Length: 184
Image 1 (cartoon, rainbow, N blue to C red):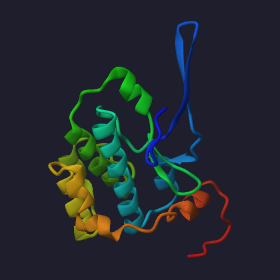
Image 2 (image 1 turned 60 degrees about the horizontal axis):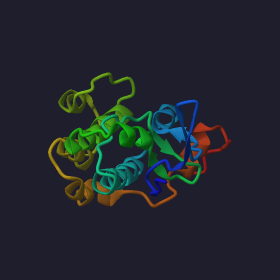
Image 3 (image 1 turned 30 degrees about the vertical axis):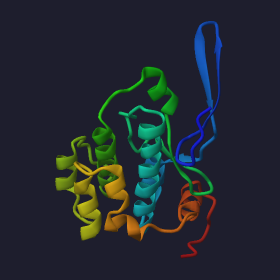
């Protein structure tokens, strides 16, 4: 089965009456749900980007496919704060041969949409032009997703601002309504 810290793990697959069923690990909320419930800090966004880049590296290098449908509604955050990419079995079954750069650009588009909720653009340049805030390093990172490799992006100055592992635990709890007070 598929197992990686940044992938929603496929636990089992079985066929019944010519229908394929896939069983995945249980995840708490999507990135879309998280960003709609609270405003994430740039250090949280850097952590999310770093984890997504590690997940894409695994998908591209170890599994030999492209995701081709990476959006913030199929990126999940666990109650422990882990960031995981979903729908990998579909990529494998369909053997998506899209562009690795398309997947990488999707991270830039996703972060633009987190920064500007309601943004409907699906093109990186249009998304980038629509963001009205964010540090210079964040904006440079988003722009760089158009052409850089995963390895280059992992070395980008913005990623060095990533919060520590577990930084998303409290935000996930807030969105799920499990935190009654703001302890920050």
